Image (cartoon, rainbow, N blue to C red; front, side, top):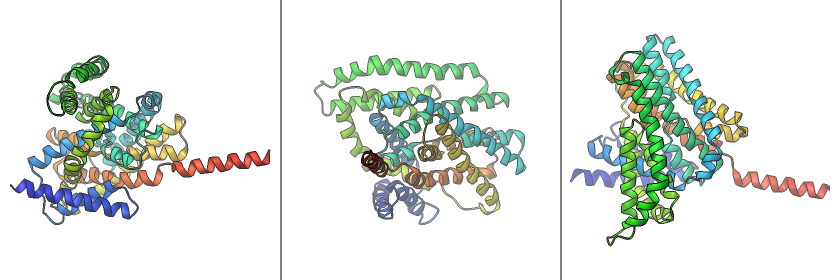
Length: 396
């Protein structure tokens, strides 16, 4: 029954730390992330990594992205597709150049430097999603652009990884054409299923005489989308996001959203936040401190600047563009998966793996305060616009 006690500690720690973070003027997600570090091996050593933590954390991030899909304004997402593509591309080019150049300067080989550059291109917006949700900004133009850019970023980075593995002669890149075809098949199949199959299934299964038929059907669809995404080589969080969007287009959207949030935010999402902090280990990091500091600064600066430039070029104001760039900074679980792949293929040295994990965690920790600091203050902006309008009328 050890896992029951661990679960109690995790829920209590994240809720208390989240409340303290809000009282200090920061998003609650920042406090929850720090709580994971404090109760984990790095400080108090109360909670240790385990298969239980991993499984609950995976369900947590999937439910988080599922809720994001449910709350996404699809029309807004469609209108901002150009901006999303520009943000994703900008947020790939600059980190890749920065990571590659810095790694070469630190004495890494050409192939290892290429891999570090690719690693810095990754983006995971699960933390950004939670922060935007707390700020009631998930369905804004900026929020939709961040979500769309994350999808584009994931596809491009996975394809880049496949190309790199192929160029460097590893087995994972041996069937490059198949990898591209699977990505295309995923999006075509998901589009057809979302438009034709999901509404039919939701309608038919919602009437069966069992408890919670609508929620059960929604969770079955979520699992199917995630499983299919993973099979096609796309991140499971993209599948979860797509499932949320699909159900949001049906009449059951509000019922599913109302019932899934208590499950997610009470049990699974707290474990996801804590699991990030559990990865931190400070043993032996002293010798790689220069490598860690340099790459972390480059990772944050290039992603923020690249995303901001993409947003600025597609019509966003300076503050909005900066906020969008900030929303793309977190590398999250996507970068960790790529890092593990690099370790296995010997493109990432074992001595640098801990530094990369810390880099990922630092980019995750800085994202919530960056978003809050840079996101446009709509209430203030609207008040200023009204004031200007009143002054104009008086002058006339």
